[in-house]
Amino acid sequence: MQSIQIAREMSQQNWSILMAGWRDFPQLNALEKACFIPEDRWPFWDTLGVLTLPGLVRLKAVAGDCMVGFVGGERNHARHQGWVTTLGVLPDFRRRGIARALLSVCEVELAMPVIRLCVRESNEAAIRLYQSAGYQLESHWKKYYAHGETALVFEKSV
Image 1 (tube, rainbow, N blue to C red):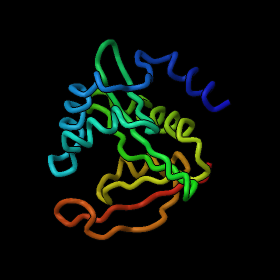
Image 2: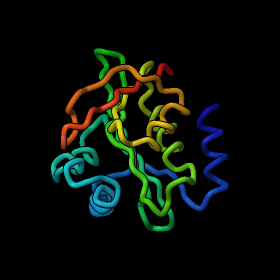
Image 3: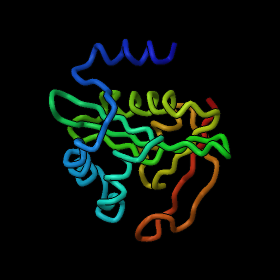
């Protein structure tokens, strides 16, 4: 039911969500540079890994031939948890529901009873998105990010 609603919302937009793969490396690398400060960007091997390692969720939002958003996720079967490892949308494409749609489809693809993610405590827009999507603040990781910023860890039962 949820995926039907997501598909209905996307059909009214000029973008779509597709599976990502290794050929998307240049565009994902560019998206990382546009969305994150240098210290938070994934290095080469992490970026390549999220696009190629088996079992990971990797979804891209595309408008025409351009990747305008990306979400990655992984499953921890032992803990019965999914983890949203990254979520980014190009600045010119924000506030169009792309991040929310990527997050929702990622949750469905992860298919785990609990999903977690972390975000810089200063990223108010992302925090509002996660809270409105049903995530609850679970904990704080002090000095997790570059320059000593705290990470807020959010969790959602699905």
